[in-house]
Amino acid sequence: MQTTLSDTYRNTPEGDVAERILRSCVHCGFCLATCPTYQILGNELDSPRGRIYLMKQVFEGATPTAKTQLHLDRCLTCRNCETTCPSGVEYGKLLDIGRHIVEETVGRGVTETATRTALKTGLSTPGLFNTALKLGQSMRSLMPGFLQTRIPAAEAAGDWPAPRHARRMLVLQGCVQPGLKPNINAATARVLDRIGISLIAAEEAGCCGALAHHLNDTEDGLNAARRNIDAWLPHLDAGVEAIVMTASGCGVMVKDYGWLLRHDPRYADKAARISAATKDISETLAAERDALAAHRSPLTKKRIAYHPPCTLQHGQKLTGGVEALLMQAGFELTPVAEKHLCCGSAGTYSILQPDIANQLKTRKLGHLQAGAPEMIVTANIGCLTHLQSGSQIPVRHWVELLDEALAPS
Ligand code: SF4
Ligand code: SF4
Image (tube, rainbow, N blue to C red; front, top):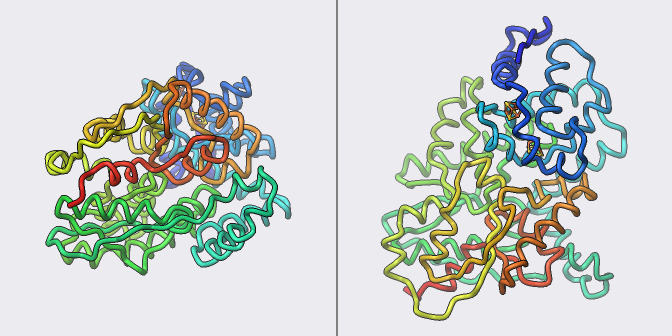
């Protein structure tokens, strides 16, 4: 697409990236058919092509308005459009830059700013989040049904095997996941322990930074990345093989540390090293399939429906790996239509854009339940809690089921 950047952005780091991406879009519109917000709202400005055009206008000198911000806010950052695009348009990178510029120019009202700050701080600070969660769980039985669906009951983690193997991997504990579903990382540790890998966590690491990053607080997001890099590098130096992600939303962020910190002279190389060492748990286990097969148990397995998170299939471009591991373990996967479409969770999107998020959730659950599964599984804590809030059958992380299906070591 012909693009002429304004003096403000020409020959700037962000402007150069934006110009390259804008020029790669040929305006064909193939991406419209797979954009969830375009499917629901039917407005070109709520499609990838429309948003690209809005951002192009800003980079060419137009002053963004609250309407520009609204259409960018409504984007789920699911990156389904990237998977569809025949020209390889890096929409996610363009959106990051565009949203940041629009945020700085248009700003937010007092209430909206307070809500976004509360979400960013409350969700990314485990101490705050866990205290609020425990309070909510203690009062859960007194709450009306719709609120109960929002607050999951307290769960036990199960054993986390003590490190005993020469092979070691790190895990990102995450911010909300240990409070909501402590068994996910413990189950991951048990699965890896069976095949000769000890899973450890670096206490100094914390939130991956995605929450702040997607709420346009770029510096907070980068500071979270720098803290995690400092926490993990000594472990890599000591021989840890990989940094394992059990939430695909965190994984896509950590794999991007190298890109996000490329202009930071102190962290660029370190960030690239961390990103290269980062693996989704499905990638880690796919490389260990023979070892896993030796632990296969003959017990009857469930019929399950799998929801691949956008951050796994579109963000990390990982498809088919989870399904292959579950089938190898003996699970029957029910057919699911529209697997490529977002469930509406998208980080804080389900809170900030509840109408669109709920429509997408209802549509997704209809497809997931169509094959009458006993259970739904997914690979990201956000999708898990969002889907569970509307589902009568359990929604769990797939690695928990794998752990339960394997024979004890
Ligand atoms: S983003 Fe890709 S699919 Fe969409 S209009 Fe541009 S070139 Fe076409
Ligand atoms: S990221 Fe998702 S919601 Fe946003 S424009 Fe692309 S397909 Fe549409």
